[in-house]
Image 1 (cartoon, rainbow, N blue to C red):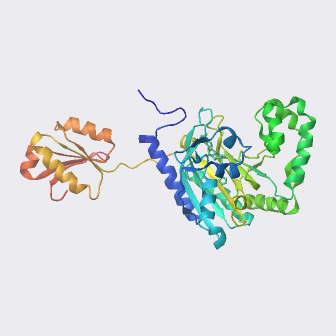
Image 2 (image 1 turned 60 degrees about the vertical axis):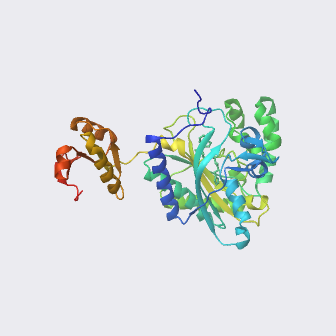
Length: 403
Ligand code: HAM
């Protein structure tokens, strides 16, 4: 038997209902914030992710589904959605057009991670990207949008917030941090030794307990922000306070992707185990420029759909549609003809095998429909159909014409 690859799942039946319920809810809410759908390819040039997500990130360094295609191109399955959207934004010359452009997307992402509960190799994200707005009010709008989506789905969360500074305040802070880490280099893990040279701030979210103990006294970026970053961060906190959105400041929240500056945030759930991040995002004002576009401020987020599916409280679905069946073999054709017409407006599930009423009712119950409609030889003679409403249990025989 051939099974799906490790960390890659099928989505069907009840899971699919949750999946589409999530997409529909998030799409509706993104629309209310003025975002429009964008679809980008699953496969992109590898250099796109190297230049955006960053060569020093785990995603690019260890987790890419990368290969050389038949035309000798170095390509890879997208590990995240932002880079592709930025590429499309520049390719369509929207950076040159100026103005504000807001997109949302959803689809499969691929990361060759070690699979575990909540961590897949093929997973799905719902994300949004906003281009052209410098104001920190847009950062707040991103957070409010995630909060709206989670509230609508009945999902509780903790919001973690940080600022990663800008090209003015980050470099002097980075130097200070490198100096600090080098002083305690003896005790830190190999990953951190590598990070000091490639992307020092990533040491701050090292999962190794003994590294974390050493970094307790490390300088905090929030204490080294320039005036403009500090003022934006204070405004963001005020907007969230005014809108009753609770948050925790996490000075170690650096995110696993290199393109962020200023606002960084993560929504976590305490109800799904160790892979607790359900959404993450932030501002990335320099990425458009890094990818050869005109400098354009940008901010966005992405939500992990599989992690959210475990938490969604589904509304009680109202029963709908018909189950139709024949009680005698010679009625099957008539049932199929009537069902064909009825399907212009309703869901109809047909059983092509004739059987007695009790068995039809059992099958209709199993199908989860609202009505069971059957035709036997008596009904055929009278040109009628017998219908039972499976919710209020009323039964009726009506002319086929009225059905
Ligand atoms: P990210 O934090 O890497 O951000 O991913 C966003 C979310 O995707 C995570 O919070 C998590 O719920 C889900 N996720 C990530 N990896 C996995 C996995 N292996 N299995 C299951 N779920 C996973 C980004 O991808 C950025 N592009 C977000 C962004 C958009 N920033 C600005 N705009």
